Amino acid sequence: MPPTPQPAEVPGKPLVTAGRQQLLVECPHCAGVHRHLEDGIRRGPCGATYTVMTYRPEQGAS
Figure 1 (cartoon, rainbow, N blue to C red):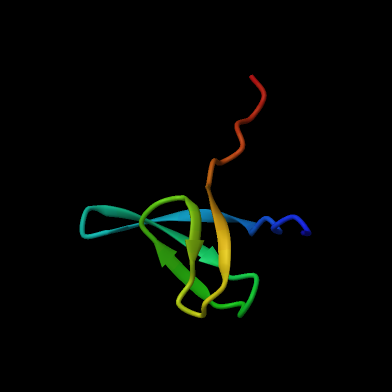
Figure 2 (figure 1 turned 45 degrees about the vertical axis):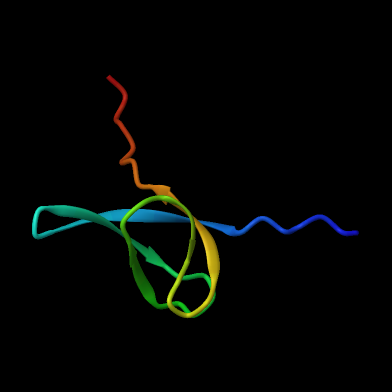
């Protein structure tokens, strides 16, 4: 039996609405923008499954 493919990893960009943070992701399947409440493996409204990675801005060298 072939191994189960891992879902694509997509970066989640923070969006704060009504005091709650959500993560915006660009879907690798439909190219739409979806919102999720948590990172991890998620299914978008288009049916695509992907792993939402928490967005962390790069830190400059000090």
